[in-house]
Length: 487
Image 1 (tube, rainbow, N blue to C red):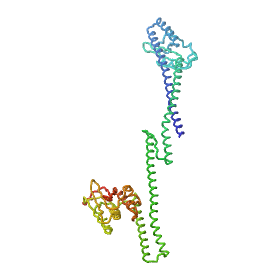
Image 2 (cartoon, helix red, strand yellow):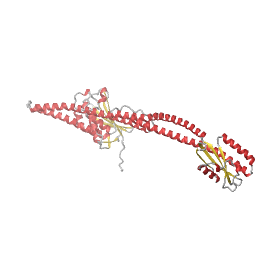
Image 3 (tube, one colour):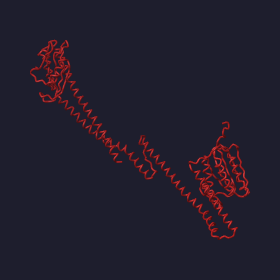
Image 4 (cartoon, rainbow, N blue to C red):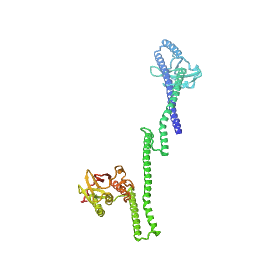
């Protein structure tokens, strides 16, 4: 990134230096034109003043007084280091008399430019030019102004010749100051270019470094850039990207860990029934058991182990489908009371075998939710089967449906084996079995499946367990309205 800093610094510095030089040159030219223009105006004013005085004197034939004036302006010209020439217009009807002039054109070697401004002055126009005069051997400014009589006829012309030395010295002095200012400005410009380039490139360098950190898998940092411009917006985007990548990485690690745990647990859960089944099968195949009753017992055990594996695989398939974001529920408006009653009717035989009673109570007959009937029934079946499995014989399984504050709350309560308080947070983990449940049959996936079904319906599920109140699973679902039968 040093290359971009150098390039930005060079480009920025060149632009500022070029701009400074351009301003300096323009100002120098403007200042030169201003000085030359001011000097020309002064000579023009002098020429016009002399021309007016000569024209008035000639109109009233003021010869004696004019001689004194002519001597005075010649002395003035000498003091100002200028020459004042008064010419008569030979083409005029009444040319300026010779006693009002101080030069004889025929005796002078006039340059073509001088002749040009004289001819223009004889036509009533003011003209000037600047060049190196061979007579004076220096740069001179020549200004010509017409002389009018009382009838506004051009009877002559006044030419003022002024040296450019003082003007040139002034211009050179100004140029020296300008060069000094431009040089100082260039140094300041380069210094400012260095500062501004660093300010501009530093965020880019930091964003590049941060992009490298992200590419290396480090998503915990930030750019640390706070700006209200495009670079600030880019930095915010990079910070947001890092945050999202960090969340994605955490999610990926969680999924990967869950996958590892899942396969580990599955292999562990399947290993026992497979080993047992294989052992019984090997015994039967080898003919070790000859007693028909014992052989039938072995076959019955093989059948039970296969049923266990079948339930485990079935629960795994259901859980996999429920955790798939693309899986769609077949939802409709259902009455939770009817679903709970249907589930309990299906389990009456199991309850009767353990001398259990069951009842579904509710506070409102219209306890409606938007849900998948079969999946909600499956949740009640899982909770009731667990209740039947772990409750004490002769007790009651109570299901209560409560409609309140826009939610339908369903609870399944039994009295029997209590889940320890420190294990309640693990009840809905895959393959979990409470330490108090012993080695009773089960895949350890029923509650996981139930939890996923409830959450896919936008609800929540929790559990409480103690010796006095028993074990109670509570579900909350968003309530829905009854469909309009007139549609």
